[in-house]
View 1 (cartoon, rainbow, N blue to C red):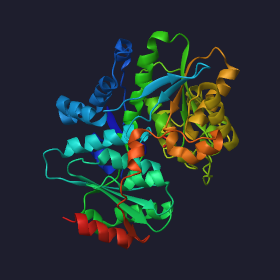
View 2: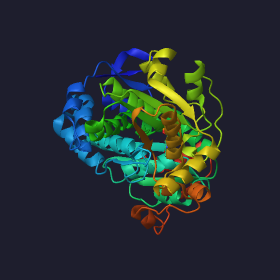
View 3: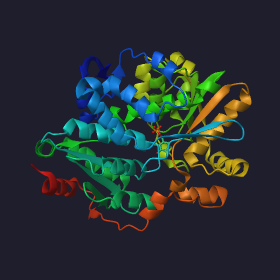
View 4: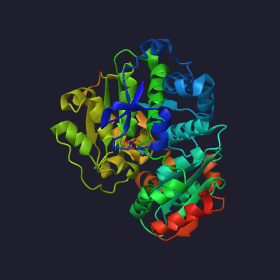
Length: 437
Ligand SMILES: *Cc1c(COP(=O)(O)O)cnc(C)c1O
């Protein structure tokens, strides 16, 4: 497999460069290029195939040449002490629960793999890395948990003071050690701007080994393919008709990772891209016109994206061909009221709490099933633990979902953060003081 930029398919880079750079120097996104055919391997899989087995197989294709078999083993063991679970609703829709990792959301899979891979690359060397990232809440906690305790790596997380939920704040600020939480007296946009300015500052990048861990990293995207393969292996002996994955989407990383699994030979018939009112991709699939616009606030706020970053990767895969993309991906959008109603419906029918993002997926899946009752197997990705969105759940269902024990314990831990003004100079000062060579 070659790693190339979406904007320059001629020049390939190592996996190592791709993950430490994050974004390609030409502004494009790194993508996997070339034929990878895993059909034979998929045929051999079944219910007993573990998530780690699948991870070793796929990660090996990308990493073995650079870190060896033992390196791949170490990465997989360190990255995935958790795995997905598969459940089913009464109406037959399968729910792929991706929230059993440390921050209770699917982003744990990507962040944890990236962290373990970076640690492996830095193993036994004197090189260090400082991960710099801004968060509006959710992504930051996955990154913080994933990098916590990793050797030779520090993490600096900027978050907007007073604008993340109390639980999210605890997830960011109670780890300590190599995880540093900067509480910015400003908005999320300020945090993002400060991070961007720091990366562009030649003085800083000379003296500090800054790197990013944001969601456009190929190192976060690839491991998300693994759970599509795992779900297939689990369901294989009962698959007769089509296999369709419904993916609640914002930046479209999750969906793109599923499309990769299909490209490698996973027998997926189609994907259903479910969005909230931020529906630029479903609109594109309807009309052929891709029109970005400012995002609007919805109850499924991790999907409030007006300019989905992974669309560039999808276009690359489908050669900018609308019909090709439409042949594989259909879109649907779910409004706020329907989202809340679906949370309530699923509680009433199945006594199951689902998060608002998952609800968007379940509603889109139900509509599809209504149109086409003989569809086959429909799997909805459940992207976060319902207890992460207590306020929405209380409004929609009338009760608060129970917190998993790890999250319960968090609430009693002490917050440690450094409050800084929303200026790059404040960030630069912190970075130099702590990490300058
Ligand atoms: C990030 C996120 C999404 C959207 O995933 P994308 O890969 O950006 O499409 C959906 N649900 C939750 C809970 C998330 O955190």
